[in-house]
Image: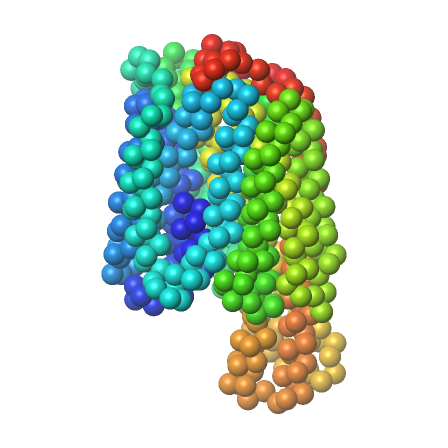
Amino acid sequence: MALDSSVMNVSIATVASDVGTTITGIQGAITAYTLVMAMFMVPGGKVGAMIGRKRAFMIGCVVYGCGSLTTALAPNLTVLLLGWSLLEGLGAALILPAVVALVALNFPVERRPAAYGLIAASAAVAIGLGPLIGGFATTYFSWRWVFAGEVAVVAVILALARPVVDRPVAGRPHFDLIGACLSAAGLGIFVYGVLRTSEWGWFVPKAGAPSWLGMSASVWLMLAGVLVVWLFLLWQGHLIRQGRDPLVDPGLFANRQLSGGLIMFFLQFLVQMGVFFVVPLYLSVALGLSAIRTGVHILPLSLSLLAAATLIPRLFPHVSPRLIVRLGVLGLFAGALALTAALDADSSAAVVTIPLLLIGAGMGALASQLGAITVSAVPDSRSAEVGGIQNTVTNLGSSIGTALAGSILIGALTSSFLTTIEKNPAVPASVSAQATTKLAAGAPFLSDAQLSAALAEANVPAPQAEAVMQANASARLVAVRASLGVLALVALIGFAFTGRIPKRQPEGGGAGSGGNREPANT
């Protein structure tokens, strides 16, 4: 899942050309995929609890495989939306919560941190490999082969899933249709509002963007989403008071260990996806690296993440989860801060290596603990429910992280560029005023080659063109630093919530041993 999302982003121009649409059309498909996952993750977790986690996982794989095949064969945007955005999104909504539950049922408590760490690390490794695989496949074969290959991967997964143990479904759980509609609507509206911030603005509307009462439509959508989610939680509380089966028990959020784990998940994925947005953009646009070379320079992050997520549970099985989480947050903060400080006008691609190793190690430390922390906070019988909530939180963190990093990047780029242009005597006042008007909605993040070609096409005189090129290069650096600085600050904020993480590793026997445990309020 992480791999094909990364490949789609890398190959966006080629995909648009092949299916007869624009880059905006493919961006819409990417948005729709994110929305489908956000909307149906909580209901997907409930479906797993009703029909069995293993059955939900296997059905999800089949749906996902059908979506991959449809995407590989898509002749136009409509079919691509059906395969990638809808079917793969629905498959993911069944698979991801089931995975959380199945790990809890198939691994003894002491081995769960390593198992959850590997799952989290695999996603980051796939994101890191995406530019390599996507760039190679698109250059020498076709992006369609990546999605066709996923069908074979799904077949292998289904064959290997046979020995997986699942607990029999107890009773006849009721599916809360009203709750499913409310949660899907609330989360979908909120995430859509977040995804539109790059075009509409967060609070102050951009030029030509929709607004109401002087505020961007994005913030109104997010507020509407929060209101619907609040109504959803009220409805869940009503069902519990009536003695009926809710989609989610709101009382879960009063559990300090669970809420602490969810908050840390949210902040981790916010920083993680923000870094995965900013750093590749810096490497590919500011430094002009190819997709394959960009992927090579991102690999240190993925490799250190994998190493930390795998080795920490193995080498330090009894160490304090709170200590590991705090060290992980420190790694994120130090890496983002080091990267912010290291970038300058003469930087080469190698400058990102050490900071990315630090960020990856921090992510791996968090990944090695958080999955086990959230699941051990409740009885194993509720692990699918927690899986749905957990993946919803990570989806929200990913969406906000990408949107926040992108907004800061464009805002800082525009402000710095216009300020530099205004102060440069080589640029006439009329040209500066025209730039201010045309860039009111935000300056594009352009490479030197792209900007040079645009200036030549517009017949801009050489002195002015050189001034604009210098201003753009300087503004790009300011923008990247600003984004990374904010991500470092978000990581630092995470320290405030680490007190909710338990000091001791969960204890228990074999698989599913926590079935009768009460929620821990460590």
